[in-house]
Image (cartoon, rainbow, N blue to C red; front, top):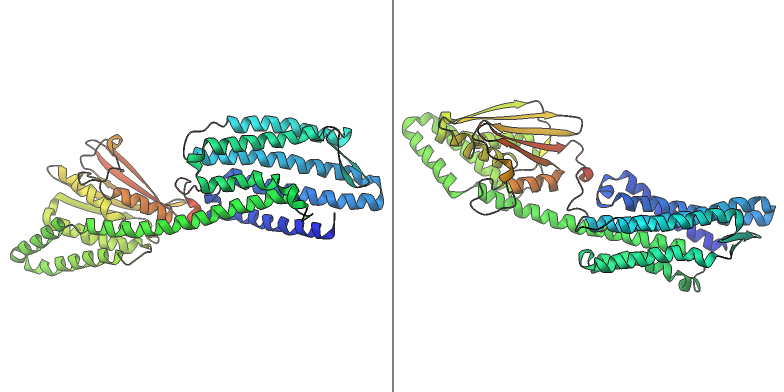
Length: 443
C-alpha cells in the first residue's frame, strides 16, 4: 500500500478514535447514543487498527522474511472478525432505535449473529488452511472459498435493507437515508477505489459511522432548541394559570376584610401579595433555574396568602437539611397548592403540609407531604389537560424538571391518609443524567 493510503487511514483512525473517546467520556453524548452505537465505534477502531497493522507487517515480511507473515495473517483475520462484529452491532443498533418507537423482534439480530459467527470461524481457520485468504510475499491473496466468505456480509446487508423497508414509516426518510449509508457507501467503495486507491471498505464504513454520528448530534441540537422553546411556553402557561383571577379576587378580598379586623397585618399581607406577583411575573423573563431558598421565599408568600383565608385550617412546617441547590422556577407552588386545595382543605378541620429536603450520593430530594384525604394514584392521569383535572400544573412541573435538570417527580398517596410528592434532582447537573426516553434520536 502506498504511503498516501497509509496516511489516509491514519487520519480517519484518529478521527474515529477522538469521537469514541468523546462518546465514552461525555454524558451528553452517551445520552443521545445507544450502547450499541458506542460499541460500533470501538469495533471500528479495532478494525482500522488491524488493517494498519496488517499493512505494517506486510512491509516487514517483504524486508525481513516470512517470520512476519503469521502476524499479518492474524491481523487480517482480526480485521474481518471486527467487520462481522460491527455489522451485527449495527443491526442491533437499528432494532434498539425502532424498539423505542414500536415493537420489533430481536430475532433479526440473533440470526445475523449466528450467521456471522459461522463466517468468523472460517476466517480464523483460514489463518492456517488458507480457505478464505492467504498471504504471499506480503500480499493479501483471496483463497479458494473467498467468494463464499463474502456472502456473510451480503446476508446482513439484505437483512438491514429489509428492516429499513419494513419499518420505514417508523424510521422516517431522514434516518433511513443515514442508515442505508452504512451499507451503500461500503458497497460502492470498489467503484470509488478506482479513482482513489486509499478508499477501502473499512474507510467507507468509518465514514458512514461518522455521518450517522453527525446526524445524531445535529438532531439532538434541533431537539434541544425545540425543548427550550417548549420550556418558555410552559412557563408562560403555568404562570398565568397560577395567577388565576379567582385567586387574585379572594386574596384582595381577604386583605379588604383584614383592614377592619387587623389593620396592622394589612401591610404584611400586601407585601406578601406583591412578592408573590413579582416572582410569578419574573418567570416570564427568566429562562434559568433559581436557588431553592428563593423558591421557598415565594412559596411562603403564597402560603401566607392562603392562610389569610383559611387561617388555622392550614398548617405548614419545614424541615430543610439541604438548601444550597437550584431548581426550575414554579416547581413547588403547584404541588403545595394541590396539597392544600385537594388534600387538607377537603377535611373538616383542615390539616398540615410538611416540606422537607435531604441529599443522598446522587440526588437532592424535596418531599412535600400532607395528611389530607389522599387519592388512588392509579386514577392519576397527568396527560389529561382540561379544566376539570385537579392535578393541573403537575404535568408541566414534571416535564420542566426533566427538561431543565433531569429531575424526576414521584407521587405516592393513600385514601384517608394523605399524599406525598418526592422530587429528585441530580447533584451532577450535566444534561446526560436522565433516562433515555424522548431524547432518543437516531442511533
